[in-house]
Image (cartoon, rainbow, N blue to C red; front, side):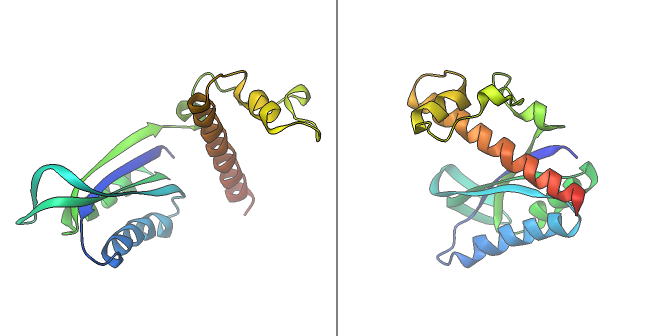
Length: 165
């Protein structure tokens, strides 16, 4: 199944419950149909770049969130219909990240692990990060590569557990 990312701007309410219900409803549709959810991120409440009209109401503030998931195109269309009809949704878009893990991961990241790549017990944090990142310099670049590795490990574990369950 292809990996997708949903970017959503939902109407801002005083109670957090409305956003939580929208995210839960979207995730439940996917999970009930066998689609694994990789990540859900709440990006915060922000002023909209311009006044937006949706479902006969104007909005100036929105709650931004994203969700990464694997799904079939047919189920993606159902999720799209759900977002279109929900009055809490101001704007949304679905991005296809790739067909498989290799499409999503940066080309510079080596997915194969050899015994020489493994860190020994006496390694320091800096040595471990250097081994993981392949010699990338700079804190921002290192953190970005470490996040990609974390994503790869979580992605692999979830796929393996799905195969054996």
